[in-house]
Image (tube, rainbow over all chains, first blue to last red; front, side, top):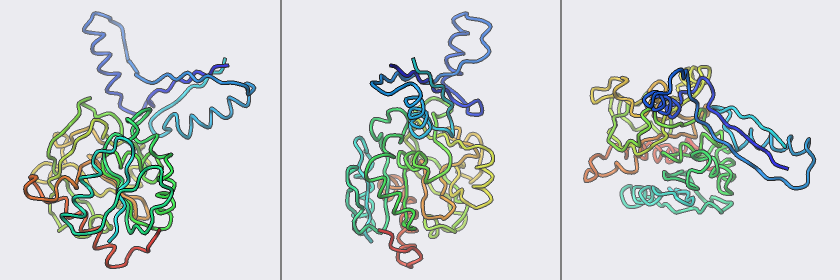
Length: 79
Length: 237
C-alpha cells in the first residue's frame, strides 16, 4: 500500500517560486499560463494497516508534521 | 545567569551565541545537544541559527520534534525565557510557541547584509534595555525569513504589542525598500502573548562587539539578563 501526499502553498501565501517558474515558462514561449504553484510531493510506503486506519494516521501526520497548516494545504491519497 | 544554547545537527550560530554570552557579556552558557531531555539549571534558552536537520521538509519542522524541544516546550509553559534567532525563530514557529511561519524570501535570494531594526515596544524581557528611538544595526543571513501570518493573527500581534522589531531604513522609516525578505508588515521579530518566548530573523549574537561592525545586538541580550536579574521571570527549569 502506498500513500501519495501533495503539499501546496495556500492561496493567500505569496509563492515566489511559482512566480519565477511562471516567468521562465512565459520567456520560453509557453503562453496562456495564468499561475504556477510549486509544492511538494511525498510517497509513503506502508505495510499492514488497512486503508481506513492508514488514512486516519497519515491525515494526522500531515496536519502535525508533513504540512504546516499556517502556510500549506495538502491532499492525501492512498492506493 | 545560566544560558542553555541548543545544538541541532547543522546548527551553525551556536558558537557565536556562546561567545557573545560568555566572552562578551560574562555570563555562563553551555551547549545542550538535541537529544538531551533536560535543560538542567538553565535560566534562559537560546535556540540558535543554522540549518537544523538540513532544513529538510521545512525549516525547523524536524527540529521541533527533537527531545530537547519537548523540554523547551515545558520550560516555556513554566514561564522560562526562550529566544529563537534565525533558524531558532523558524523552529519556535513550527513548534507553535510563536504565531505564523517563515517562508522563502520574496526575492528568492539568500540575503546576507546589515539591516536596521525599529523596536516597537520596550515592554518585554527582550527589549527592556533598548533606549527609546534607538535603531539596531544587526546582520541578517537567511533565505527563508519572510514572515507570514493570516490577517487575524497579525491584528492580534499588533493589538497585544507582540511585534517587537520591524525592518526599517537608517532613518527609522518602515518602508518596502527596507524590507529584505518580503515579511508582512516588515516584521523582523515577535513574542508570544505571555511575552516569555521571542524570535527574530536578524542575528544579535553577531553584533555584540564593535569589531564586528555593530554592538547593538548586546542590547537584546542585556534586556534578557536584566529581566532575569530583576526576578521578573520565574525560574522555569
